Length: 348
Image (tube, rainbow, N blue to C red; front, side, top):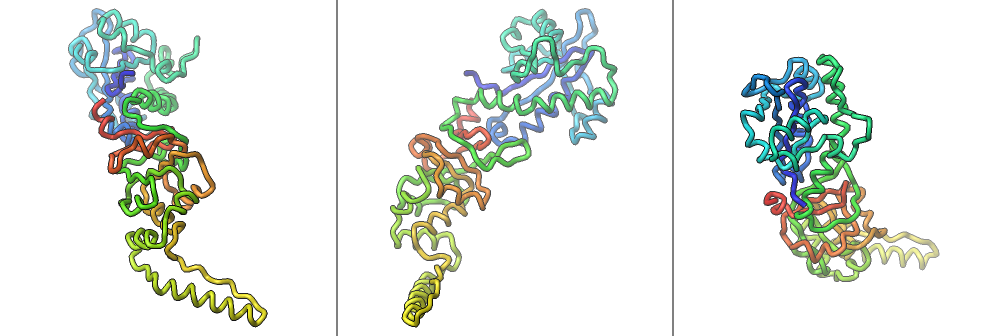
């Protein structure tokens, strides 16, 4: 599949909605780290009616500027080029998106270069219904309310636009699983960072703070692969002043108190030191210091330990510890359960 990295919105010189489409999609792209890393570009252009005088650059209507301004968008610097004066922009684009059939026909009549790239916006998003058009505009006056309405309708399509663009980036996809902790402004938890791959307990010593933890499974299996010396080494690396000797003494004192109480017929619950050096605490310390977590196996009870820390997490990424390399720059998208190679996103 060809990557869609250069998107061109085209409207006729009558409707001129392209600046509105461009600024709204641009903001969504800038807010999505995956698309930012992939260097997605969004441009707009105008196709004029046959016989109409061509204008080098079209400016947004004042009513559009006002409507978008109230919604937190700015199109003041937008300049839409006339396709008849700049036909090279059709070659530049990977996809040419138009609001309706009229622009589609006008572009096809103007250039064969556009034929395989043109698609109506709603069809591109998979939201087209026969006889219905969300972005209907023919008979409406071009008032501020009109542009506000069109912007609101177009924003409904943004998640589908983003999804379609990401679907085209599959050559950079490393693994796919089930995403959890999905929280960002655009409905996804996205993290960019270096991977720390942990296949065995001793790999925990090489974990780097703020890296993305890539592991087969958190829990009993990994915990059983961590002895006390390894746990001490891991915890000391991330806890500023863990006095393990004092903790050990406290543990012995607790056991003595418990024994003495039992001899007297009472009970005293022994207190477990906060940073007692065992596999469970070693794993918890790593989780606390991870930027994100990727597990190659399915969801297990012990994996919920990341929930209190709201760490982006993808489960069931089969082969993750084999496909992802240690220190590799990756991008997690928990809304889609996908992990991308950041360098390949730029190269597509």
